[in-house]
Length: 124
Image (cartoon, rainbow, N blue to C red; front, side, top):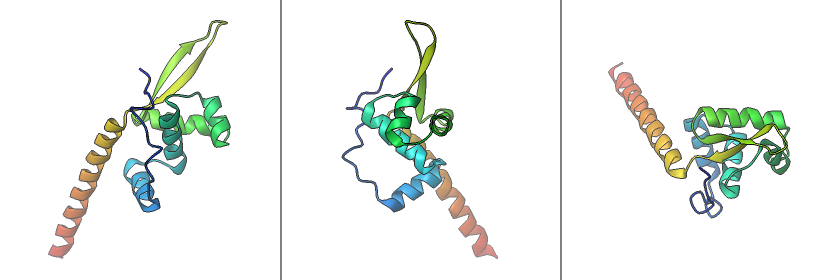
């Protein structure tokens, strides 16, 4: 299932730097992870090679970041069989609605932990 640009259009959104920092913390994403997710949203899908060229990082660095994104459900990996033999991976972003759900869940969890800490420290 490929994500089309209409489903994942983030070009028009300017994310303030403090929000980026918060998202990196809440989601456990690095700046590179966020950049890759953004580029995948703009392109719809991509290969490690294309992302490496676009972002200007080594393929192994891009692949490590993509593995983290896949493991956390932010990106999906599909195998494409090549006509001449072999295969390659195509990466597509999870729909922003799924990312929104993950963000909301983690924000709520963080908020509950902060409130519990505040309650505990007020008893001391």
